[in-house]
Amino acid sequence: MATWLPSQTEVIELLDAEFARAGYEIEDVVVDARVRPPRITVIADGDTALDLDAIAALSHSASTLLDAVNGIENRYVLEVSSPGVDRPLTSEKHFRRARGRKVELVMADGTQVMGRVGEMCGDTLMLVVRDDRGRDWAVRAVALNEIVKAVVQVEFSPPAKRELELATVDRGAGTGVGT
Image 1 (cartoon, rainbow, N blue to C red):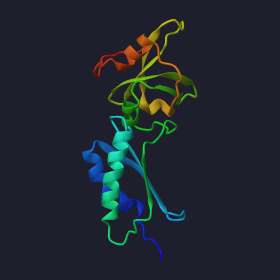
Image 2: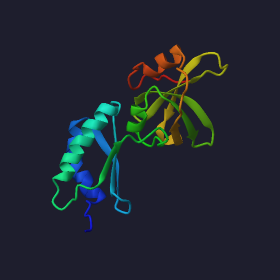
Image 3: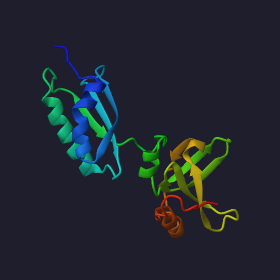
C-alpha cells in the first residue's frame, strides 16, 4: 500500500501555529518518501534554546497533529531539530539568537573578521573583537548589509569574562558604540 505524506507546505501550515505557541518558528521542512519508513524532518528555531525537553514537546505535538491528518499512515519517522551550528547566519533574527556565540564573518570587501555576537541595534551588529593591539576587547559596529557570510564557530573552551560581558551588555540603538 502506498503511503501518502503531506507536502512541505502542508506540514508547515499544520504545525506553524503550534510551534509559534511554544515560542519557535519552523525554519524548514523536508518530506522524504523515498526512504523506508518515510521521514518528515522539521527544523525549528527560536529566541530560547531548543533543548531536549522542547524538542520532545514539539515532537509530541507535531506527531499528534500529523497523525490526525486523513490518509496519513502512521508509519513515518518524525524528526524535530534545530538548524545546527553550521547553518549560516543570514538574517537579523539569526544574529539575535546567536548572541554570545563566536562567529567568523566574511565582509563585502573580502576581509574576514572573528568576533563574538553582541547586541543587534536595528540593522547593525555589535561585534566584540580584539582591539588593534590584541590586548583588550572592543565593540565594533558592523552593518548587516556589509556581511557576505557569517558562521558560528564551535568553541572548546569558555570565552574570556570581559569578552562575554561586552557581548551581553545592552547598549540601546543609536549609542554610537563602535571602533
